[in-house]
Each structure stands twice: as structure tokens, then as C-alpha cells.
Image 1 (cartoon, helix red, strand yellow):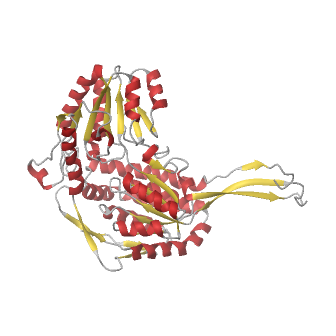
Image 2 (cartoon, rainbow, N blue to C red):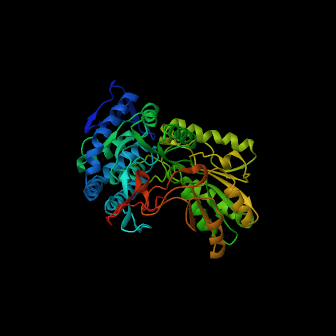
Image 3 (cartoon, rainbow, N blue to C red):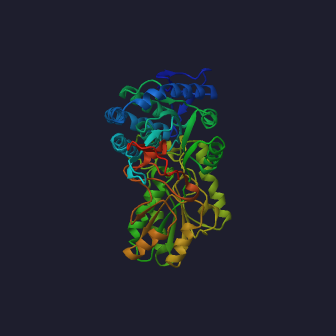
Length: 490
């Protein structure tokens, strides 16, 4: 049993009014622990703690800030199995996937800690004699991080690390579905040596998040979640002149051209669609397949869907865990009726898995829809479950047009043996990332992550420039020539 607490001004404390929520395993309903049901007052106390801690943290030399992150990385590595088991139990992803998330988090944290020695500005020749021109970066101040449940370790850390390296103080509001993982993250960073108030964590649902959006002392918000909520975040930040970064929905296509290795494409689509129960923003949601290979592709991916072994996240035989909650399961299952109404052909799945012990959890069956219209709801709306819609096309132009005909643009993939066609698709696809002959899922910490259109607002996360969202560039002119600059003022 693990009882998470808020972290405010260096102390782990309950919600001010003492309210808590139970944290249940979505695979079997087991009680894992509790977490504070925080209010706006808790969030406001955390912002005040961050505000008070900011001047000292800003004055801490950046390489010393990086040293604390390196210590956090060593502690995270030492507690890797505990973290993996905790996030598997409360989020529902199988242990192998949870360990993968821990590994990715560790690799990025090490990379981001090194940014403490790479906060480079520029020097430039001035038009004015006797003048040195240069730029440097200043932290924004207090930043608010609002994170989702599907990657409860990786996403908080890939926001937290660059924010801290850049010299900001932080209030993290993690998802209410995965509080225990966030609590472990907070304890690791405190143990690594963060001064009190530099990192604050407030658990709960909408109230503390809204307080961060509204608070005048919060200079920037980084949010990952649904497009609907993201649009609210964008509007609220615009009204209060906060810098905003949003990573939102996805409806990611895999294009299978008529010269593709169909078996390889089917296996990639199955991994992308059914892995992590489809609960990834990078999940493969659409397969846009040229007619010549469509029958073989549908047969292959349907067979793989039927072979998926679902089970408890800690069961080593399980390849897919449950949906994170009953609400999420019901959302996924509701699209069965949508697909039927739209005239798509159900090739596999569409129902809830209730066999044996699965009946105690929230397990959607891996689902394949065939002959889906490109403009249908199941082809356009983010379902966030193990559901793949197959759209048949007759040409590369039609495939690219179908891929681009939605509001999202996170990631995409194209399968072909012709590199010329591959690079043509890379150029024309409206997505922030594209894979060639590989699944849509995945990404590396030293490369930018993010999308276009309704998928993202603000600069990319991860990669070498992630810290720049959390900083402001200042330009400086130093007149060292001794003469007053009176001859030119423009």
C-alpha cells in the first residue's frame, strides 16, 4: 500500500482539507493506495513555494543544477524495477512496456542533465564600433506542468528536466489515475538534492490544474492530454499571457504501398495499434493500404490481433494490459456502434474481453475495422484504445490525401521498398514525425518529439532544444569603445 502526498516547499503533505482518492489497479480492481484530492488552495500554496524558491535556484550555476539531475538519474536507475512495477499496476501497461518506459526516461534524463552545460547564446558582430553584442537565456520563473496517465513516468520527467536545467521552479500536476508513480518521481528528485520549493507536486483532478492556468505567478504551462482540454488550456494561457506548450491528440496513419513487405507492415501495425492497449498518442490508428495488398494486410493484422495475449500487467505472458479505467473502456467500446453505423466491416474484435480473470478488469479486445471511409468518425476521432481502421486506396496520391485529411498530425509511417516513394511521402505527410518501414510508435530523447495541426502548440519536447521553451532569450549590447553612441539611434 502506497499513500502518495503532495510535495510543497520541500515537505510531503496531505491535501489541506485531508481528502483522498483511492488508486485502483485497472486489471483487477485491487486497492494500490491513496492520493490527495487537492483543491485550488493546495495548488496556490505550491505556486507560492515555487515563487519563493525561484531567486536562489536561478542563481545556482547551471552546471550545478545539472549535477542534481545526474544524481536523480542514478537514483531512478537504482529504483527502476520499483518504478516499473508501480506504473504497470496503476496504469495497466504490461511490465515489459513499463520497463521500457523507465529505460527511455532514464536515457532522456541523462541527456537533459547535460543541457546544463549547453545553454548557449550567441555572440555577433555589431553594426556599431566598440560594441560587443551577445545573447543569453534567462528562466521564465514558476512553470506549471500538467501531465497525463498513459506515460506517467516519462512525460513528467521530459517536462521537468529541461524546466529545472533552465533555472525554473516547478509545480507538477500529475494525472489522477497514476499518482503513485508521480509520488515516486518527486521523492527521487528530493533525494537527489533539489532545494525546497524548486519542485512541487499537487495531486488531484481539474481544480489544481485550473489554479495553475489562472495564477498570475505562473509564467508558462506545458500540457499533455486531449485536444479538447488542450484547447481550453491554450485559451486560458492566452488570456493570462502565459507561454504555452501543448502535446495533444493523434490519429496516426501507416501507409502500406503496393510494393511493401506486407508481413512486416502488418506486424508493425499490430505493434503500434495494440501495444500498450493503444493508449499512446503515437499509436497506429489508421492503416491506409493500397488495394493490391489490402486483403493480405487485413488477413495478417487480424490474425495478429487474435494472437494478442491480454492479462494482468505483472503476468510475464501478457502482451497487453487493460484500459486505464472503466470510463476509457466504455469510450473504446462505444465505437463498435459507430463503425457499424458507418458501414465498416468488423474484421476482428469490437467487444470486451471477459474470459477468466480478464472479467475483473477493463480489457478491450484488439479490434480491426476494414473498408473504412477516410472521412468516417472511426477514421478521424482519437479512440485511444487498441483499434485499427483500414482504409483502402488505389494510389500514393490517394494514400497521402487520406493520411492528411484529419485535424491531427503527430506521427506517421510508410512501408515501401522504393526509397524514392518513401522520401516523397516523408515530404508530403502532414506530421511532426515520420517512420519509414517501422511502426509509428517510439522516439528517442535526443531528437524532437511533437506534431503539427491540432496535435501541438508551441515548440517540440525532448531533443536538444527542449529547454528553450522554459527560457527567454535576452540580447545585450556592451559599448566598450569609450565614446557615447550618439551618431546612430536606429
